[in-house]
Length: 128
Length: 238
Image (cartoon, rainbow over all chains, first blue to last red; front, side, top):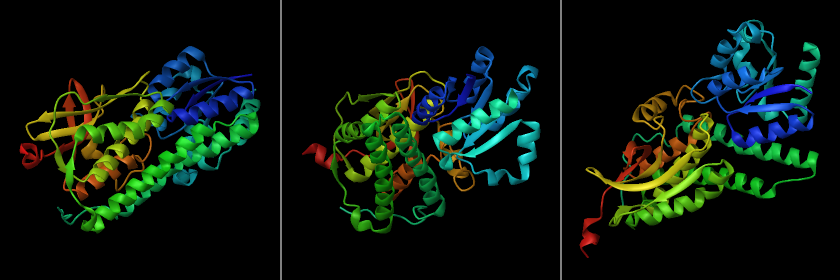
């Protein structure tokens, strides 16, 4: 079991993802925005973050820069699950992967709950 | 009575169509994941799936109405309309969506307002599109519980009908920058919505087709978006 921080702006989708991850035995904290996510991360010390990049006000990229600025959070794996296709980051994948620590990128419309859970478990296993 | 749509409407713009297509991914994704969850758990929330599909169909219907109004002024039959009844019907259409998103929807139609001259279906469609976009977008701003008020009030410009909340994000600036960014950004209303915000632009487009405008407005210390309607004085006297 791991502590997952799920940053998902749509409340209906967030409920669905939360239940899927909880069924897989994880404890899940949900935030709909980047600002709250930083505060929740501080309180819950997550083992892994699942992040949508399209957030209201502050983007997921802004969250990543803020998140990685704290030394204790630099090694926490981040799985991006986004409406934005990864092809839009073709030129900046190194930035996402190497500098901001995105370990996996899932295109939301093509990611089943099963695939999300498998990806999260794989990344937790790698971290361990 | 007919009104003619002046040129320059972006109704057929590829940007708006793209925005609607992007927006429709959300309800389809919700339905797909809810169905998958139902398969995994043996418990499918068919009511939620139905309401989600209804919302998607409503966005498509409203977009199509906007196109028809802009392309064919014959559709723009104006009639004497009670703003209160339009807001009431809008509230009815948004009720299920608001409940699903944990949004408290209030109807504030206190006060007596005479009839306005408008295209009833278009006005309702614009307010429903706007309301749906705000219900889906605004709760994503870390606020524990959003209250959204459907309200009408008098201003020096006419009778204003719109949606109001206790958030400064509903501003003229957000609207203007959204319109500018619509052509270039997949999230033009960045402070209002995490999606393409197509509902706001569909409302904008329908109102433009009716020679009305989507504007920012204040009411009872709340911030909102709505439109200014002109009283039908002739009918009022009768």
